Amino acid sequence: MSLELSKKAMGVKPSSTLAITAKAKKMKAEGRDIVGFGAGEPDFATPENICLAAKKAIDNGCTKYTPAAGTVELRQAISNKFKSFNRLDYSVDQIVVSNGGKHSLTNIFEALLNPGDEVIIPSPFWLSYPEMVKLCAGVPVFVECPASQDYKITASQLERAVTDKTKALVLNSPNNPTGMIYTREELQAIADVAVKKDIYVIADEMYEYLVYDGNEFVSIASLNDEIYKRTITCSGLSKSYSMTGWRIGYAGAPREIAKLMSSIQSHQASNPNSIAQVAAIEALSGPQEAPEVMRKEFDSRRKYMYERLSAMPYISAIKPQGAFYVFIDFSKVFDKEYKGERIENISKVAQILIDDYLTAVIPCSDFGTPGNIRLSYAISMEDIKKGLDRIEDFLNTLK
Ligand code: GLU
Image (cartoon, rainbow, N blue to C red; front, side, top):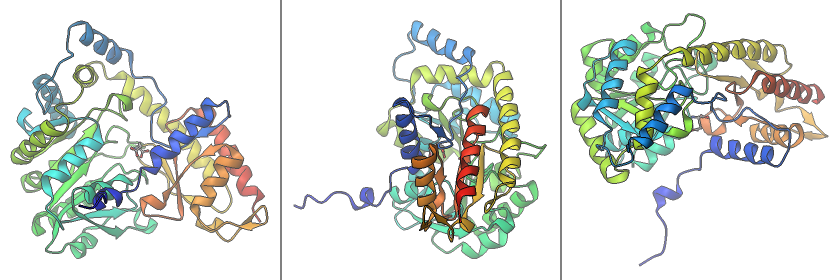
């Protein structure tokens, strides 16, 4: 018997967003004046009413196993939110609560994919999708979506990418890393292709509350019955309620898919954290002022960042419409010199920024776009100003 480890596991890259964020946090803990534009993690404290609900949950003994798919009370709160916010009818038995959005997504891929099944991923993409697909024995198929089409997949591109092995499309709107939002018309055209070609749509709507400039957020599954039957809608509380550490994500799906996801989860995790589930009920059903206050603050940061970045040399960005990222094209920097050496690639830019300018950024090679950098504006305005000054200083030294 060989001691060789799993090829599937060895084919997976560690998450660079988490690695860069961990490095920045470590440097900060060592007393370095680091600015972390890394992971999309809101800088706000979790709202007090949510924390209080969790404390009460402990006092009330909500510290035991719950149903694998989450408590009925939480799934009911999610069902209500799906109805009022997303205009979607998912009953309690169509909802599975998991340990964060990533866990919901892996459950979805596990429930859908057979070995060799293809999953279409519009590129740029959030770095974890392809790794999750590979872990579930699927094959990621990338479709290049250039800046000229706001980094969004078109219906005709989708149609061309579908093969007899295609199982699903991953659709992320508002998008990480680009901040773009699909319009109702674009979604309708994509939905028509998905129905015609009979493929699933995995709608990752994690940033659904973070929409700016009066843009409309639309859940693709709400467009008609046919697309609803083929869509799994996924979201979570991390970004909207500043609850990244609590690990609560959820999905609404056709009944048979939800049943499979719940059964997979029952073996892999038993259930999501019981205390966090009580907190999540309070988040979704309690006062909704806090998420709106955070959204407005993100909006002012977004405007400031976009304005400052637009005035800097060599780089270009399109104005984000949602989420909390600015996606910046740095490719013009590649033929420049820094300290007498040519800058070869985006990792070098990120390395110079963290080592020489104490500024952590996400190089987007793992997001399918090796010419770009992603900056998160889920950090304080003070840090944003400081970090942008440093990036500007760096750009001004280039020859
Ligand atoms: N989703 C966030 C990001 O893209 C958190 C880190 C991660 O999960 O990748 O930064």
